[in-house]
Image (cartoon, rainbow, N blue to C red; front, top):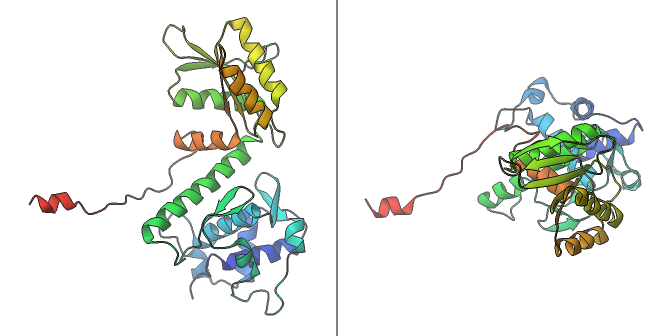
Length: 302
């Protein structure tokens, strides 16, 4: 018997979460799902097509991601998940055994249509959707996998120490080609957490401020303070990086200052995570697929 479809994991995980208020790790949900869906030993050991993990592990992690993204699960701390008030208020299965292998209202709640917006994020079609070609599905699932990875990166970055975050930011900017750099963040640092030397002689410098916030937005006062902290150094370039986001007035202030004699670049949590993925900071390559197409010119020139 085959491992249940990915969408069938939604309801099982939500039911498991609703039965206990205790937060659970992904591997705890995986074990509970195996019991609830009565998976055999061979089903639990079945690998994904890449062969890097089991299907149960992969589908459990993706189901948790979708449930959290749509507000049915919440994460009180890194790596732990529990049912949310929205999940508690949602309809339950009206019939059938709890371990019945059937699609449920959860799948319909999450939806399968591309470009449907939920809280500013794009939902993508389920595996097997007839709305996309195979090439489109590759691109769709690649984007979704990258989106999930970005969220995992942010979850981890938000719980590291401020000094570790400052080192991470300087390492990332160095990896991006901004020259050698130093972490300066400490008491009396005058609001500067790092300095990047864009040339060997250190004539061109970029000053960095790194704020590891969880939920609080960076506002206009923080941007003005950062701008002022550049003055004692005679600096004209600054980068303000945060794990959260910037208010509209903060962005407007940065744009206004950048029209003068300084340039201030703002990087929020989402962009930070994307940069870390692009420049391989804090991530490793798990598997690589090479997609090829027919070279029509080759055959035309034979």
